Length: 188
Image (cartoon, rainbow, N blue to C red; front, side, top):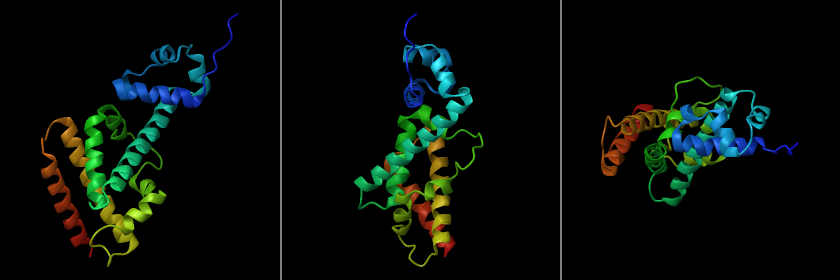
């Protein structure tokens, strides 16, 4: 009897993540994943009860991937307003990582997957304090502005990725700026 192949939950998730990036979650099956892992499907179902629980972890891994990318872009461009650097990074990543974006943008309801969870990250507290023209706003008002900017940016990304709208980076920056300025003005 050949030895059982040990496949960790992390290895299953990382491999599924790579496959989702390539072909989308809908193309991911237990058999295809097992083939990529060079194992049977047993290790997959030892790590995950079913493909839906794997999809849940893939969703959160994808959200973290997007969040980390946006925060990194903001750090790389310290002179650009954080909302703008992060918004442009989100749209850029949505275009470049279409399959992950489809998973992140899926309409399925998940517990705790809203913008408020993102706002609780340590990096975001610092980000919230750096929002331009918001020194007179309360923390709650800043969160509201950020939420509105986030929803607007996500909507723009969805339109760009779907091919419904074609805009240059300059036009996208202009839209994000005007939206931000409008949201700040209505929050004061």
